[in-house]
Image (cartoon, rainbow, N blue to C red):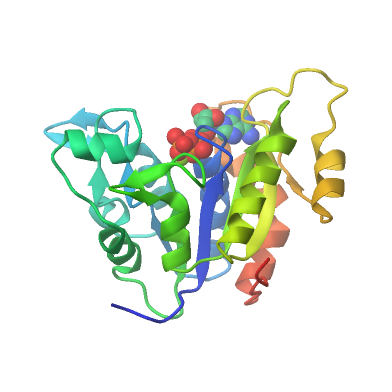
Amino acid sequence: MNRRIPRGLFVTGTGTGVGKTQIAAALANLLAERNQIVRPRKPVESGCRPEDGHLVPEDARTLQAASNTDEALERICPYPLEPPISPERASSLAGLRIVLDDLKAACLNGVAETDFLLVEGAGGFYSPLASGVLNADLAAILPLPVLLVANDCLGAINHTLLTVEAIKRRGLALVGVVLNQADPTGDPRINNPADLSRWLGRPVIVTGRFETDAANPGWMMLRPALAPLSDRLADGFRPARL
Ligand SMILES: Nc1ncnc2c1ncn2[C@@H]1O[C@H](COP(=O)(O)OP(=O)(O)OP(=O)(O)O)[C@@H](O)[C@H]1O
Ligand SMILES: [Mg+2]
């Protein structure tokens, strides 16, 4: 097994549907534009649509397009699964036994030392990913620094602080926290960026809400908010452990 620590990021969330794919795609695109060879990985994806006898992993497809890579979808997502449920349960229903070493090998497959490995987990940091494997286990074994995406809504402070605590417990570096407008915020008096940055003792990255536009993928609109982070990552910034 490969023992070197890869360059890259593990994109996790406070839960499912918070915007991990959109944020990862924007970042991948910015890094590719800065002459980085980006290797996106969504090692296991559930909720894949069957098409011509294959399962189509949409997240992996989005990451592939944003990274300007010619890597095959099968390498980006070697374990596509059909039911839109936890990948651990979906894989066991499909009669597959995916273990942590399989996921690690899938993430590192084809990744050179100078490449940028961008892994999107599934669900949240403690969501099950495979047989007895949480997202946290994969981030820790690679090991990769973590970018945490939260939906900017009521409850975001609790979800974020709990996840940061878990990342800290695994001894992983936290690259940043993104407050993303995956769902409209609700009460305009909520100010999660101000409150959360105070609780965390560090600034958070705030993205706006995009309207779906057939001409451009949504993540394009998230690029400006992520440009400072992509600059630092392209310059070789390595975040400290928590
Ligand atoms: N800033 C935003 N503005 C508008 N819509 C957004 C925004 N961020 C995400 N969305 C939408 O919210 C939905 C969920 O986003 P996304 O698929 O990136 O979440 P995810 O965390 O990757 O989900 P999963 O757990 O399924 O991988 C998508 O329909 C996406 O287009
Ligand atoms: Mg996703």
